[in-house]
Structure formats: C-alpha cells, structure tokens
Length: 202
Image (cartoon, rainbow, N blue to C red; front, side, top):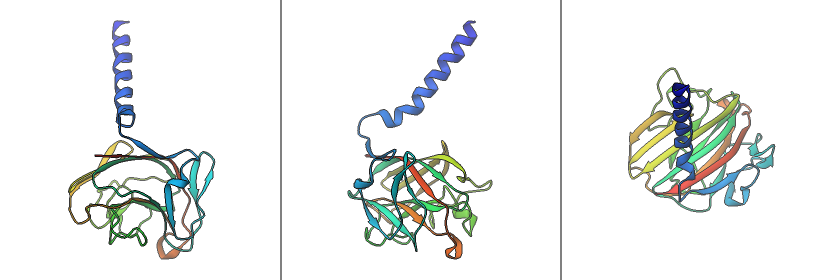
C-alpha cells in the first residue's frame, strides 16, 4: 500500500512539473480555443476562422500566415496543434520582414510530415537544424511544440521530446507566425488547427 501511495505521489509530481512551465509568470496567451484571431495580422488568403474549439485554416492559394503584432527577441513558445498527414504548416520565428515571411528570413519550425527532403520534416528548423530518423509525425492527432529561443540557442520539443537543438545567430528579433500552405507541388494541404498558443518573453 505504501509503495502504491509513493507511485501516486511521484506521478502527481511529474504531472505538476509538466504543467509548471506554462503556469509560471510571464506567459501571454495568444490563442485559447476559438479566441485569439485579433492578436495576429494576416498575410495571404487562408480561410482562418474559429471552429471546433480552435483556430483553423484549410484553404489558400499559397503560403499564408497569422503574424504576431509584437516582435520578440528571446522567448519561449508553447503551442497545441492538430495536423493532417498532408498538412504543410509551421511556426516561423524572428521574421525579419513581417509582410513577407519565409524560411529565408526567419527560423521555420516545420509541420510537414510529407515534406520532400525528410531531414527538414516535422520538428526540424528548415535549413538550420535537421531531424533524424525515425522522423517525427504530427498527422492525425493533437500535438505540442515547446520552442526555446535565447540568443543564438534554439531548441524544439515536439510532444515532449527534443527534436533539434542548435546554435545560430542569423535572425535576432522579429514577430513569429503560424502558417498554412499547400503541399508539395502546390497540392492541396490538409487543415491546421491551433488550440493553444502562448509566448513568454525572456
């Protein structure tokens, strides 16, 4: 009985530890269920909308973004998202041009299970930090990203596991964005759903 009680206490402590990161001071909630579209500027023609307890997009002619209205230098991001197996999405950080965001002017934390060139599939930072096989997969379920950017130090956790950790100082400050895009060769991309997005400046 004492052993069972000890196991319960340990499990409870681990649960609290997992929740501590986003319950500590300084976190700013940008998306909470269907709330939060007003916290972003829109680039592109994606049909962003509040639906089914999340902010959703599933149609656009090209790459579209929800761009934060504030700029960030050092920060942590916590995000909960649902993706299809064909979804092409991601979080672009420290964008140097908030009106034209891409992997050439920001750090792109990818959500793209079917990306040609799997080294930069889901969980990678495109062009900067490759993931290793077996490759992470986001399709068909709810997932979490925990992203840490402090000076040149960049770390991505996908569903609690570190997928990449690298040092790079090319992009130093800027807004971050949530992307919806078509798939490879402009094939229709699956939906992206953002249920929770939080940021904590460091």
